[in-house]
View 1: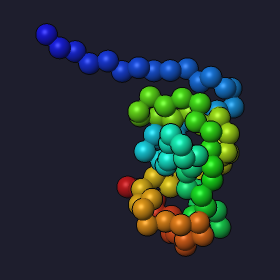
View 2: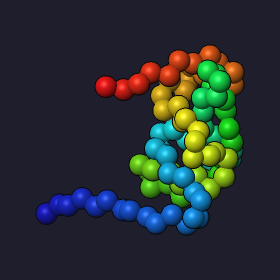
View 3: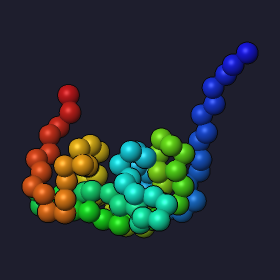
View 4: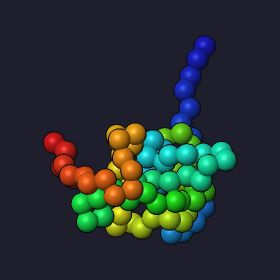
Length: 89
């Protein structure tokens, strides 16, 4: 017998934002951060993660709803790296 479970959590903070967990870099002793696009450049922003279910992370501080979060190629980025935003299919 087997089964699968998906755990959905309610946001703890009314103004918290949900982002894919894979976008959050650093944990444990390191302060977590995300990369966002501003003026054609990648910018590293420290964030506070209120909860993370392995799929989505609830960010309580550090980003705004209008921020464009970079979702891949984090290992090629540093603060100020020029980036080009491409629209998906």
